[in-house]
Amino acid sequence: MKKAFLKRFAILSLLVSLCVMLSGCSAGDFDGSRVANEGGFWLEYSMLNRECTADLALSEGDQLEVVIAQTAGDVDVIVGLPGKDPLYRGNGQQNGEFKLPISEAGTYSISVTGHKAKGCVSITRVPAAGE
Image (cartoon, rainbow, N blue to C red; front, side, top):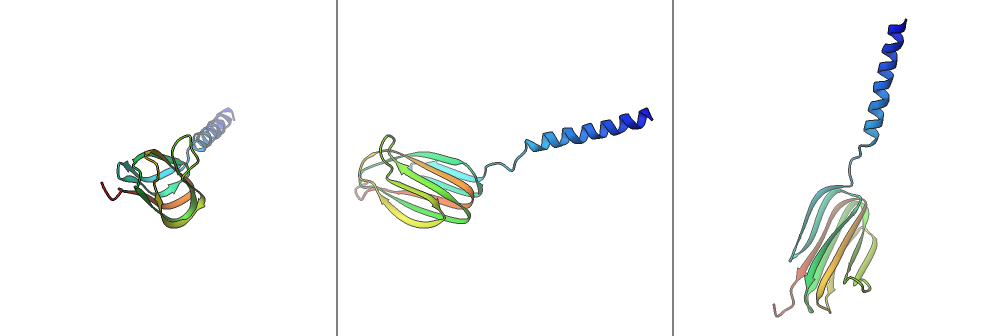
């Protein structure tokens, strides 16, 4: 009788421990690829549930070509100089393609925050005509 009780107690303890350990696991908040360099910022993901950021040095007259292509969820995109109003703020973006002219040189911050998002965001620097 005591052996049966101990056996049940051990199995129950094992199951409770397993449940506690597995509850800490999650599928994660980013599954994809991220590239940031002097030419731009590119994200491709099968899951994006967090913020990804990059800094990009831009010259007056440059342009940013922005492409947002979502197959699920949406993203918030912010582009701007730190300490100033954003050049662009798009909340809940799903799909779009547009250009942002750069009128002031500086290091621009780019933020892409996903909400159960699947797709890609491409922000490519197009140098000013004289470069």
